[in-house]
Length: 112
Length: 111
Image (cartoon, rainbow over all chains, first blue to last red; front, side, top):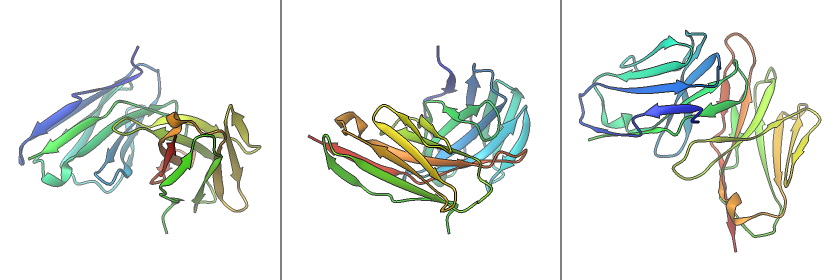
């Protein structure tokens, strides 16, 4: 059984479009995250939710909007996509803040 | 100064070698420490947590030095399959706590 799943795995779209990435975890964890890993392979936290509440919102353009309908899901919506948004986006979950995290397989976003 | 710093490498070692990575952190309030490994085009996966007294898992040994604010990972008898990027993670466990990932150290084990 997949612990943390993301859809889609690959996403190719044009500049200016709006897209969403979905994440689900079946681990019963309270905390979920979105990370961006750019072409230089650096992993940067974007958002963190704990019990459906936004805890961490790093310096991310407001074109990015996370939504957590319940503790098991954390979706990421991106408006007006730009070339610089091309990256791999990882979802992760942990039992609570500061605990070990379990990552989804990633969504490879390419903006053309 | 970055919150978490790692030597990016690359470390190129022969099979069977012993290799060690260090990771320094700046926030003295940090409470939890981890090592993850990330294979090319894959997600990061937890390798091991790092405990105050140090801990070992097979060929891997992790240590924490709070006074000097660094953690280390030692890999003995390197295997080809150990080739990956190793990420250290430092967490502050408060209500607004967060985990900070280092930029990773790349290891290549050669035959």
